[in-house]
Structure formats: structure tokens, C-alpha cells
Image 1 (cartoon, one colour):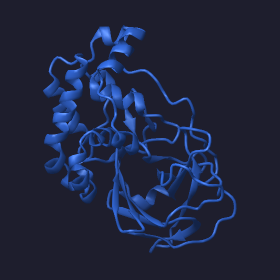
Image 2: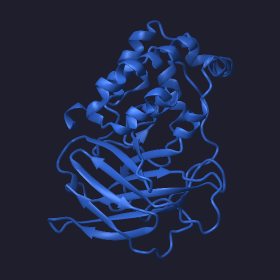
Image 3: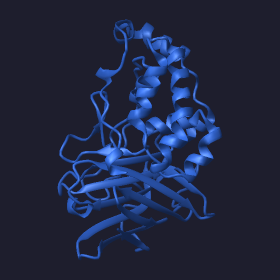
Image 4: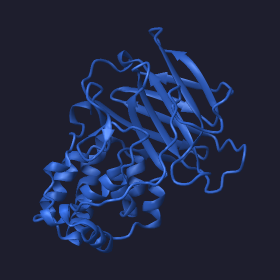
Length: 302
């Protein structure tokens, strides 16, 4: 799979016309008016996020998943039991929740550390998310120049939810008929499973905005970039999910405008009004359970 990961995509390569890029408030208004409104499923999809970035001090690699399990968390709530599995190329880490932090060693006596617990989100002041975080020295993932990162979340009832890029999450949210198949699959299955239906959805979005000369060609190009559904991270390049490129994803990145612009072919303004809270110390997310935590069952397999 690592030989077929998505390529970094610059918005400069998209066929966005001058009116869309320079039209200011009018263009932004038309974009909002013509873009199909997100469904309830689409809104729900943004409650799960995958991150890949470099630790600010140690320069180790950090991979994390955040997800919401309750709309009204109560004070002191720990959350339901869950298991998160984070994949990076051929390596994977399995993290069991709901609350644990531990430093571990792999089979070659190399240290890494994991965290699972509650952290603050970005959407409103009392939003609390579950998080699973792995920090690892770069050598634990080998010498690959680019990493393909994806994750799975297993609930206590055995159900599985797969996590990849915000682009595919947005397209899937508007195609609920294939969500079950997607969450049961792995990146190696994506081209056969998703290419046709996601290309059709991207064509609809591009047509609705009227800023792409060849909506079908635009959609095919997007699918070639975004399938298989992984976050690509090149550790030797600046991390950031922004309008220049998408390399990994930092917790401070807010991808909403980037995703909307790329999928519709029309520049879409607007960012979250609240940045996610970060710390310089592991596990880097700020939350109610950042104090001493109970040790849990945390491990890794190659």
C-alpha cells in the first residue's frame, strides 16, 4: 500500500476560475447557495479526525485520532470502552480506552508512548472528545520518505469505524449507501470500492458550483489523489493541511475551507472560530484528564 499512497495536492493545480478566486463576498455567497447542504451524516463525519505531525520538542512522530461519543458529556465522564488501531505503512499500534497513558517498548527495546483519554475539541467551549495518541521515534516506522496513515475505531459492541482523510469523509457523508462497505474495508480495497461512486459525487458538487470546465475530469483527478483513503505524511517536509498542500495534519489545522474548495472547485472562505487547544508536552492535546491517569492495556504490533 505504501507505494500507492495519495500525492500531495496543491490548490494551484485546480481549475478554479478568476471570478471564483477574486469575487470576494459575492463569490463566497454563491458558493454557499449552490453547494448541497451537508446532511446529518456529513455533520457527524466531522466528529472523527486523524492527525499526523511532528512533536514540537523531541521531533518524534505523533499520530492521533479524536472522536466524539456523546453530545452532552458530563463532568468527570470517562466515556465508553473502545479500541483504536493506528496504521502507519506496515506498522500498527493498538490503544485501548477509555483512560490510560503509558510508555512502552517494542520487540527491539525501542521506546514509544501512548495515551487514551478525554481532550477538548474546537467547536464549542464544553466539547469533550476521546483521543488516542501515539508518539514514536521515526526509526520505528522505518526509513520511508512518505507515510500512509489511517486508523480504525472499535466500539465496545464490536462495531468498526474507519478513519482517513477529511476529503473522503465529506464525500462519504453524502453517500450513506456505501458507508457500511467503506467502514468494513481497508485502503487496499478503495480503488475498486469507492472510485466510481465518489467520482460521481464529486462531479455533482463541481456541477453545482459551475466553476469547473470539465467536472467529470476534475472528479477523476480528485479520486486519483485521494484514493486509497489515507493521510500522506512526509516527515522531511513541513506539516500542514492547508491551501498550498496537504502533508500530514496538525491538530491546529482546520480543513473545512480546504475540503470545500477542492471538492467543489470554487474558493470557499471561512474557518472555525475556535482553535483546538494544544500543549507542548505529550499527549499535546489539552483535556480534563491530563493529570495522573490510570495505566491501561496499551501495546503495538509490527
